[in-house]
Image 1 (cartoon, rainbow, N blue to C red):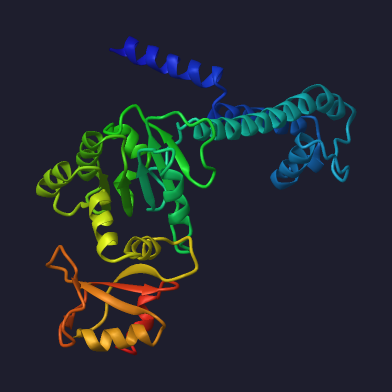
Image 2: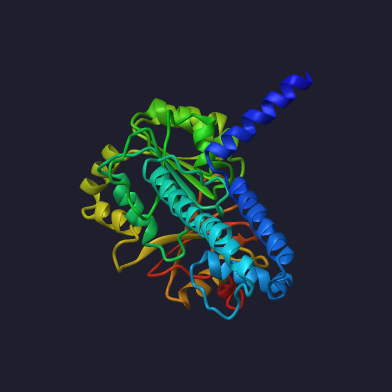
Length: 344
């Protein structure tokens, strides 16, 4: 048992030394500086004996600044400094700078190749899956909102030139717990899943909901059946189903309807855009809330109560608006929720 512990210790120490770990580098500097101070004190260098004076002189020597206001005064002290202090201090400093630059370059390389770790970042939005035609537009839409948090993109695809505005995570699979954790899914505020197929989206959604219990999860499906299956098992997940046939029918009955719907869901134009917010104030009526929005250049469209999954459009004027209800409105810019309290 003791032999095994000693062997593990020696192996750990060997790896730390060969990799020049920061702890090893710090220990080398401390040993060299301590030995220098002891020898110079023994040689009678009283001007370098105070610890603060010695640290200042040693640092200026290591940085190759050499102000000259402090220096060894004895012949033996100068010889010792030239043969031992100069080479050791300067070598330690240049090694530390080289290691710092190397570590920074390695972190940048890992992030560029999708090997970064963002689990400790502040909560943001994680995009899972990459569609060359649609994901870049989704990123543009999200970043067009001035209040947008940082974005992390997780995909199985190797991106040669990832968007510098997002953090990129290269995953083995979209269901890998380790890769999802690296992307920060556990602490994410929102997660959007847009995979290559509905089955992959469904599998990724189940893996995400097992980790991100508080995040708002949105999934895109081509077909309604897998979306319905996910709703049964994960009611809190918001599923979006491709509305091609429905959009065509709507546009045939009401020409231009598709343009209106597209404009309302886009952040890239300068016109009206659909926004949502939670009502965090005292209970009021729909009419009073609508007037508060109208006074700020916005139009209140619908209410989704905390107990209902579907929003109610154009409800009765007396319908209550309670704390925790989600309100959907159209405006040119997002409205701060606190500014509505006085008018409602």
